[in-house]
Image (cartoon, rainbow, N blue to C red):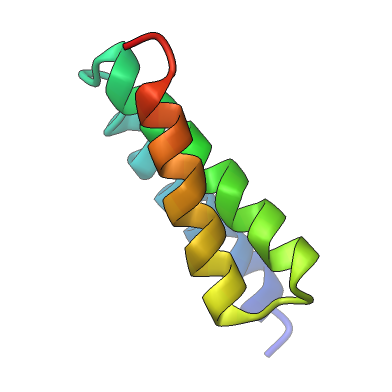
Length: 71
């Protein structure tokens, strides 16, 4: 059980690196949409105290705003 934090950190880092490499072929509009959705999800979670509905709602609104930027 001593190695669980180390293994968890390694797995999380690997998943993060793999997911970021998926963004390599995205258009600017797709990048803006994903950034907006991520920021909206964080903002929704913070504003609603971690509510699932607030997080999803924030992600949707942020994604739409990010999609419409520089269209």
